[in-house]
Length: 371
Length: 100
Image 1 (spheres, rainbow over the protein chains, first blue to last red):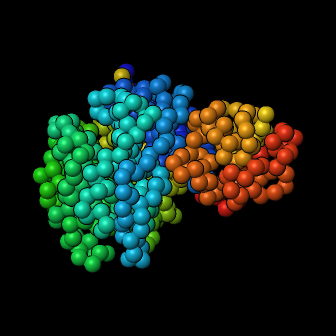
Image 2: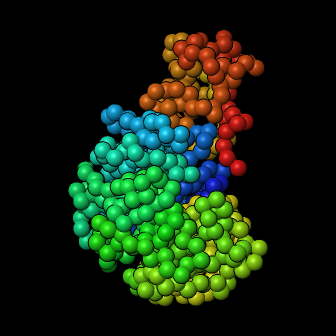
Image 3: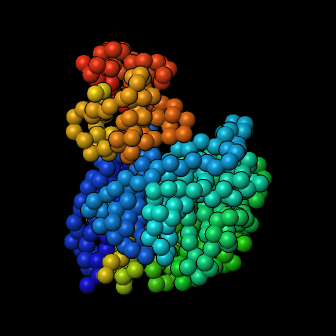
């Protein structure tokens, strides 16, 4: 019988939640790395016992951890992520130029085929790759040295490269997203990059339709249909049907189109999930109700999913990396909140229940479906 | 032997309990002690000082003999009591650091 392993990163440690395919009874281990900010943990699709984790603190900086036994034990690997060549500058909040400065690893994306290859998205925005299991890291400099880089600027969370999507159908194709620069695509394994932001409109920047500068919060792809991308932007839920070349808005009847995560059903490429947040100045759910919204039509038409979720006095947020799906049937959907709850739906969103209620603030949730 | 007291998180990271002892050849300076510490415990690289510039991390303090040595030159000799092992070098996470 299949199992699921949920990797939860929080502000004060990592937790691993496991269950059988029924997804009713859960074992919880942790905190792993208690007291540290765990921005992201993710398993290798090629070797699911191989996990990578980003561990950081403002005192002690950045650590990368690796496990080869599904998170039972961990090994500290390389943490030297150094910008290569001229550091360059980017736009700062006050309109001046500011040098790139490493802050932390936001996202680790293991290769689809090689457990020793893993990508790291960092703040200030850049993309790194390790091909030796995380021991050594090399920057893919073509991104940070893109001609538009001086126009990139930090979002509220810092100038972070937070999303990395690898395309199984087009080897060498990588999508990344930066807040606040936008989406970029490489078709040559990260050597060269093109901005992919046509169709985005952001009133928070001087030219609302500029090539770069958009605060993209998250992009998602169904692996079987990699030319279709979905995006939760600062405001607006967007969709591309041409691998990011153009985007159109699909916010439809959402109560608000501000939010952070977006994800795609494992078996229905037109079924997508978002968690609307009241506004960019009030980072909590609207009407004090925690509602996941599901579209079965690839956007435009959305239904609120509320069964099992708090519908009064709720003021949590769901961060960009804190939603994930398993590949069981029916598809399981998971998300974590800034209030420390991790919810699961074992029926694609119709019913929800908390796996845990009282963790530290949840930053990331990843799910592995295991044999 | 130079005695070094690490903050709890770094003891966990280095998988040690209590004080750490390192050998330093030549002049006993911050740089020499941290070089020896990182050679013995590679997982500590980057956690106390930058790996490239060797600049102390902003929220790390270095104390010894009731003195704050954080802003001393890394090449200034440490107090004699540290060099003889009578007193430890304290690596401290600053009160200002961290997040809620």
